[in-house]
Amino acid sequence: MSDPSSAGGTNVAGESPRVEPTIETDEVTITDDAELERTIGLTGGLAIGIGTMIGAGIFVFPGLAAGRAGPAAAGSFAIGAFVALLVALPASELATAMPKSGGGYYYISRGLGTLPGAVVGLSLWFGLVFATAFYLVGFGYYAVDTLAELGVPVGDGLVIPLALLFGAGVTVLNVTGTENAAKLQNGIVALLLSILIVFLSYGGLDTLGLIGEPSAPEQFAPFGTTPVLTTAALVFTSYLGFAQVATVAGEIRDPGRNLPLAMVGSVLVVGVLYVAAIFVATGAFGSDRLSTFGETAMVEVGRHYFGPAGAVAIVFGGLLATMSSANASVLSTSRAIYAVSKDALLPQRASHINLRYGTPHVALGMAGGPILVLVATGRVELLAEVASFLHLVTYGLLCVALLALRRADPSWYDPDFRVPGYPVIPILGALASFALIGFMQRTSQLVGIGIMLATAGWYAYYGRDVTLKGVVE
Image (cartoon, rainbow, N blue to C red; front, side, top):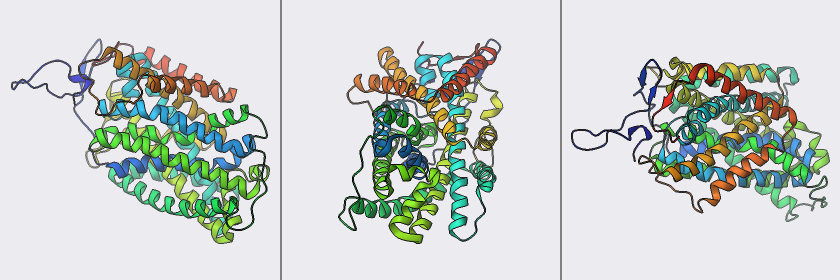
């Protein structure tokens, strides 16, 4: 497989040399040959995808989603999974053609040009920051509930301090090595899936009336169709994990095989779990009562089915899930910053790699700082929707970039995986991503647009003289 930056030149043997992206400015040509080590296998890739997605959808959103859409919130999660799959397939093709850290930024910059790439790359940085802050606030709620279940009630006043403390700890962990973070991720996800499979299997049988007393049927969509779509826009944050696999593509072993399997596989696994979780949760209490429990509604669902032991299992699972989501998101945020900096759209210092640990320590600091600031706001729904807005823009443009690259057919574009049903899948992926943005709250839309305008302003000020080699203009 060749690299977009290696389109020209041959070596003595007549083979095309593999070189890293070259960035030209009006003053200097910059070549950065430093690369991150490929230490993440298929299990690690799946763990990043599943571990990031499994947190919010099951442990934070059920009460909020049921209050908005009733039992039809299960349909909202199904819509989110469908949109994610429409994007995961094009992303898989692009990732196997360009297995580089940075994910959507790298693909869009090479397919659509430097300006769209810069706006997306910088917006992706902020989108991941908002998503990570959302996960950390969820961690704070579950940490407080865990203490309460253990007989140490501390009140909600400790939610934000605990979230801040854990966020700082995860950032430090990622600085000490990607392999350390990946090992933590694998262990958390394995334990979490074990808890969820037992819980959802029993709860599903109970809801269906196969064991225990059958629950009274509830109107599926009591508020109509529109709330189902607006809820899908809210909960789409739950599906950001598959794209975070692409942001660490430069560290995935055998990317031609492992990237598509990790991205598509993680969406399928988590989508099934989400729909099952809403089905079980609304079956336990009904959507009206479930909505009154807020961000930790699943704790009460666990208590309903298994008593105090069930509540403890769920708070522990929620703690694991939000830990997993935050850990994977900090990792991905830093890689988005690393990729943009490596292309000279941010100061080059941000792409420096720590010689002791082999990690982009400056980029990790640039990720962790803004995350902690947003955590302090505690605005769960706003954080979730702004993250979704910025990612959906990236996903829509990612599908457009695939169409542009296929049409231009540059010599270096040689993916190991190709989207089935081309061009229908990427066209539907782009349309669905942009359409879902229209169902978000106005405040979230305005914040997202403001961030994108700010990133365009930064490009005009700092990066307008940068030209990326291998870009299809």
